[in-house]
Amino acid sequence: MTAMTPSVEQYLQLLGETDPIQVLSNAPGRLEFWLERAHPDSFDEPVAGAGLGPSETPRDVLAGLADFELVAGFRLRQLIALPGIEIQTIDRSLWASRYRRCEPTLAFEAFRALRSWNLALLAGFSLEDWLAEGFHPERGFESCDLIVRHLAGHDLDTMLRLGIDLLGTGSRSSNP
Image 1 (cartoon, one colour):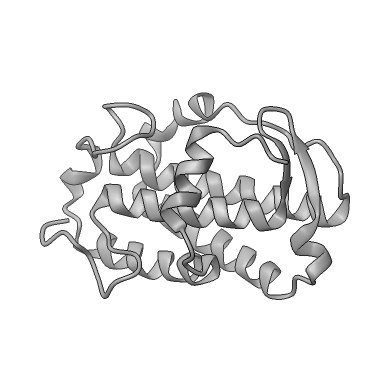
Image 2 (cartoon, rainbow, N blue to C red):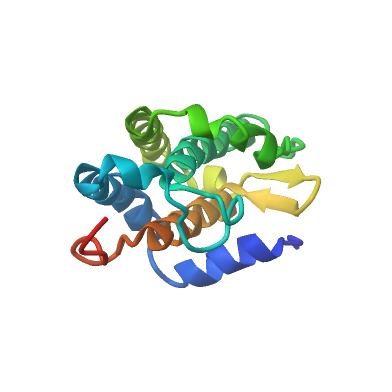
């Protein structure tokens, strides 16, 4: 049994019965649509919702997406190579302290490339791969399936905070 943190539970509730692969596949295109229409000054304006706190900006969000994709991909690869390992934790606040210096377009390109790489990995997963587990010191045992659903729920939450309807036909916001 996994002892999930409230944030993981919230991401899983947000995802519900939606296909996580659909969410993961849609995110880069929807984010690119938003990014192409965003005014450069908007990258440093606070966004709504949870995250780094009241000062979180689209710049922070984009850099965080790239980092989270990197971490999730590494964890998935660890679990299928060495089931049962201890999953390394991260201190997001230490990583996030450098986000203000990130170029939003570069962060998006990193996210898109990593997401594409991770989706290619997932496309070749066997049932054994999906069920591979590791032990997270803060949350208990986590399977590849749980990590993927967590990542998809995180995408939904992140896109909602930016005003992007990830499952619809475009941006909710008329002024990104």
